[in-house]
Length: 106
Image: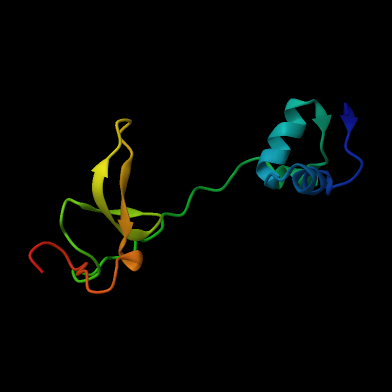
């Protein structure tokens, strides 16, 4: 694979084949000694990350008890911990009918 790339889409072809983005493809190909055309230099430097706004949580979204955590984006009641430290319990969505999942004292 040494030498000059066949065409300007060499980064794109490599990226599709190996499941990486074009910036990674550019880095990989140049580290292998492949000479890429000048048009591929646009992939030489990754743009700065754009900070994302975090979604604000409303106070009434889920309980504020220490026994509640968020697991996979869902409220999860921690009933206890295994010897290895992993939490076990139940998701609020799976709580039996009649069990109040709004937090302590409710």
